[in-house]
Length: 377
Ligand SMILES: C[S@@+](CC[C@H](N)C(=O)[O-])C[C@H]1O[C@@H](n2cnc3c(N)ncnc32)[C@H](O)[C@@H]1O
Image 1: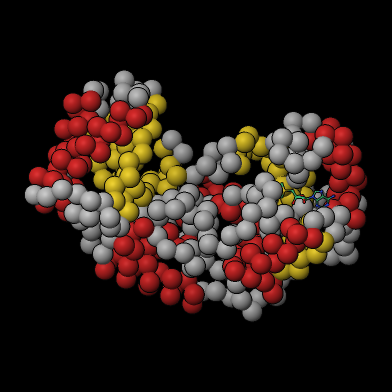
Image 2 (image 1 turned 30 degrees about the vertical axis):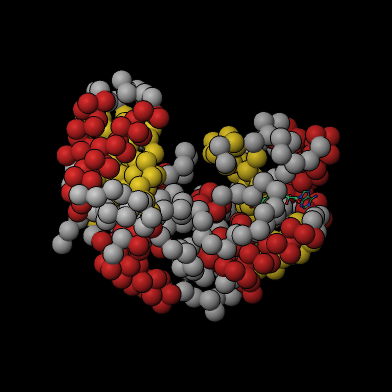
């Protein structure tokens, strides 16, 4: 059986969550190089990963690796690859490049040399001009310490695009990051979960999908599906397998609150699209008024913050009141994501754990405030 050498990029700080999910999916212990988890798997697994990964960003197929000290070497090595075995004559070829600690650093030149090499090879093989009107092939040249790795993106759109979040609301969390925040918490499907600043609903929706085993890629397409019958069939099978594993009859206690009525209706709409509408109770409410008799829950919120929303003084007061509210829930494990460096001071408590993470390239800190009682996971 043909093996595919794969890389799964993870955003900074999320690698351990991706490794954990790979282990849960049955792929054993994996290792990461430069924020990318490396695997060698069969075609059916390429499809399974695309359909099931919650925290990983993409599934990249490694085509070639070579030394690239100058543009001649780059051109020749790319030209030498058997592109005609992969790309049809109408392939829409998109080139991306990255370069770190390498002699070749000009990204624009790297992409244009690489594209020319691929096009020259295909023209030579197909003996015609290329119109690039067909299926998309996203190719990345990643040069690190003068070694180029050429990958083909089997996912296409990033895996954070689950397909349910179609309406815009201020400062949404990336779905892959939301899923990783839940993974890093004491979340358990049988315990209560709340996001009291839920915005467009990302955290409660991801929590409900995890709790009910709804695969994140069920309602979207992947680029590899357009690359021929075997990929298309593998994705169809992976989706069927995933559907068989859903447990939508599971009793859950998942809540989402936001002060904005508009946000709440957007969140409900997204939950409906994700197929978990009746698993989440959304309500318009001020986070400061949250209280519950439920015990041992998990509260995860991505707070409003200065640079994109909210006025500074109001925010200081909100963080202070939020701290008071959280301390009134001694049995709950609480987690906060915010880029605001003054957060702990305003909140009135030092976190037990700090993790540096990035949301839409904004450096944030993920603060953990475990319950005073024994953790529940
Ligand atoms: C950073 S956004 C959350 C984004 C959300 N995680 C998402 O993925 O869409 C912060 C949210 O806090 C809400 N908010 C602001 N003040 C609030 C308050 N006092 N109580 C509840 N929600 C509030 C805003 O309406 C906004 O939707």
